[in-house]
Image 1: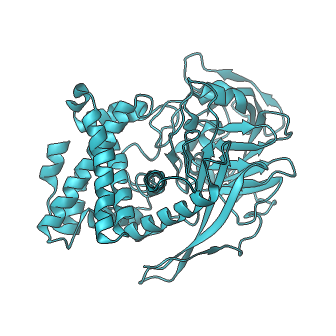
Image 2: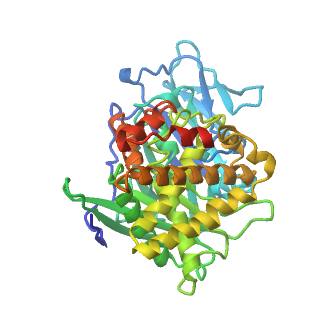
Image 3: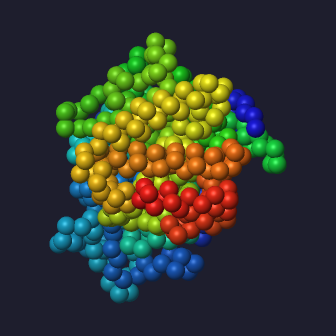
Length: 506
């Protein structure tokens, strides 16, 4: 397998026509940022009545804002920042809206029995939003005259049951000042559009898990990776690096782009698959608002990852090799998550419950195995002695270090139970997060070594993971596996039974 990095010059400026047939999409989400002196964005959701949607827009509706972050294992009250919420019927009349009396993120849209909902509109002050969300990795951001970074799930509401529909095409229309470039992770282009951009999502989850970046201070690198697998024709992966930094000395964006490309190359080699048409790495390094806000947590998405870098702690040409290695590992770790858990997962990952954090007992797989795989992928391309040293570095300084640092009362909990606790506390009380991923990674290590010892190194953990991924691909990346299936997948792939190891750790 070989790779070539070249400039992309073949994409058009915009991916979608401004003329959209109402039969093509079921809803159009429009995000408008009208003036560079404002901190407010306006969102309009226009619903397209269509018999194929099997989605009744007539009569009372429930509008919901997310509180749960996909793969974020955190609860964020995004509904607190919704202002000026209105609804309009198909005949142009205003519809009364009432916030539910209980504490959920729901509004009742009081359509009459014969009245059809057409549009929901609201606004969000991104400054208030960022100030209120204490975890910077979960917040959208604005810097006047410079930059806006929007996480889809932090601003996009939905009608009840819409989030459970697998087929619900949505168009995204983003409008900015005419001199502001726009990058959409839904439909990226090599030449940034100015003033307006369009994207298309296959359903609400895909929309919510996308991001919007715009502004004159946004750095943008458009690259491509030539993926060459022997049994397939060459595939080109359009690859984008978007960055906003308030410390350009400590974050060399060109260097980050190079590190991101090689990290993606190594993950592609590991999985022998490319399950997306394009990918964006988005980096933010911002000055802390205050001591209450936390920084440095990154998060994965279907076709992108958002890397939040602690202020002053990035990489530049003066960085040590150790700092560069750690920084690139974090990139590889979150790029890897586009496979696990975004396209290979157990129950409660998809369809996702956006208004309440789901309780997940397999975070040890998603984070532990995922981080071990990132390490293995980065190490496997190195010469033998360097590969061994790379693995040992992260096993000692990351997985064993965090496992040993865990308080005894957490160590005494079963791994599945700690995973359930971490479902809403992973980063808030990072003791739960570090214990889950370190134990999961050490479990993966033991399975890897056991398979290699039983097969004279002809097979490894990687064979089981690729088998699992192929199973998920057959099931269109939307079907969760069960823990009953899990050891059987490894048995089929390697002829090695890993059940005793699973029983020991779980």
